[in-house]
Length: 332
Image (cartoon, rainbow, N blue to C red; front, side, top):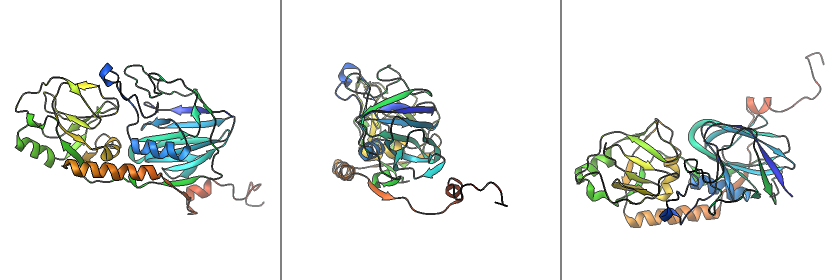
């Protein structure tokens, strides 16, 4: 059985993402993929999906057509509503035909993922359905009026459920990083100053790179290197000394020295920072980075837990319910 997800509204930067085009960087192909891999995996595993819709701060709204869809949402602390009823920012829900799911920027976080159970009926490009807008690979960013078809739709839950996953928790802890691979291009005192500084996400940040505003980082061996491959989380220091944290839509190679690389388990926290928010860094050794990665993916492999929604009565939840049908005035 197939069903469709209608795009009712879409802000800028709403795209389809899967885990990306890996193995093609040597041909100049950017991997793309989700900004927050942990949130993406929480949503897709909960729904039984092979891809997800990545929603930016501009928000989005969707409706189901043809059947009730199994939908999972996870990511930043977005305002999630089903026909006006507020839901947790990470949840699994039945999206009935005609029902409206809305996502708006909430108190924190920059990206949210909407996964629909089933197989997205969309031909892959170079082995992936991930959107890379700069190169034109994959589908174009979604706009209102589009429809996505899902084959073999997964059975939905009877009621909305909360999803809990420890790796989705936000934290003000410093971002852990490994120094290098070109940390020898910087004097020890410059590296120490970089680690001790408070940085701010710049307004010109996007899926390609987050610009870090703070003190100037000076090179001691020049700012040009023979271009080499770059990983997500690599922090380049270009000629102006303003660091760039490379993200999901990063270029395949780079010619500026990389002072350090944020470790995988902290990339989601980095991605979820909004322009104007602060962060700091802490250097770790190889053993700590490997142990953190092992624990992180072991938790993801176990999957998010599903829990019933609390029965807390709030003004918004009461207004969303038809508590007394047929009453039109106080005399009735």
